[in-house]
Image 1 (cartoon, rainbow, N blue to C red):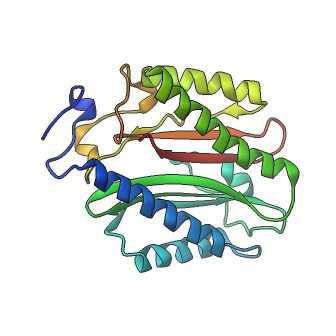
Image 2 (cartoon, rainbow, N blue to C red; image 1 turned 30 degrees about the vertical axis):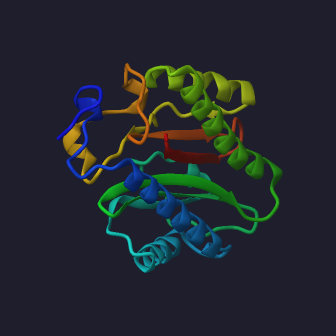
Length: 221
C-alpha cells in the first residue's frame, strides 16, 4: 500500500490514475444511457431494474455502492435516506442518477440530475447543481485549498446562486477497490489539499420553496 498525504489518501497496490479515468468515463457513459431510458410513467423501482441491466450490458465488475435513482421529492433525500414510496415519474418532473461502480478494479462514482417536460425551475435546479460543481472544481484547481475550504466555498456560492447546499453531503474517497479499508473520511472534513484522482466532490442543492432538489458529483481529476 502506498500513501500520498498520510493514510487518508492511501491507495492499493493496483491503483493507477489512468484506470481511475477509465472508471470515470464508463460511469458517465452508464449514467447517460440510463437517464436516456428513463421516461414518464416509470416508477423508481422500474428505473433501478433498468439501470442494473444497463450496467451489466456495459461490462461492469460490480456495484460498490447501491445504484440510486430518485424521482421528484425524493431528490431531496441523502444517500443514506430511503426513498419515500415508489413514485411515478411525471411529464414535468425531475430525477437524478447516482452510481458507484467498479470498472477494471477501480471505483467509478458519479451522479447527475435530469428533467422531463419543461418546468423552468426544475431545469434551473438541475443546471445549478452542475454549475456549482464546476465552480467548486475550478476553485480546487486554481486555489489548491483544503477539502473543508471547498465546502465552505460551495455553501457560499450556492447561497449567491439562490439555492441551499446540503452540507450533510460532503464528498468521499475512491481508489482501486475497495477504498473503504483506507478510511479516508469525507472530503469536506479533509484538512489538506485533496490530490487528483482520489476524491469525489458531491453537490446536493434544494429549491428554496418547492419540494425538490438536484445532485451532481464527479471525480476531482
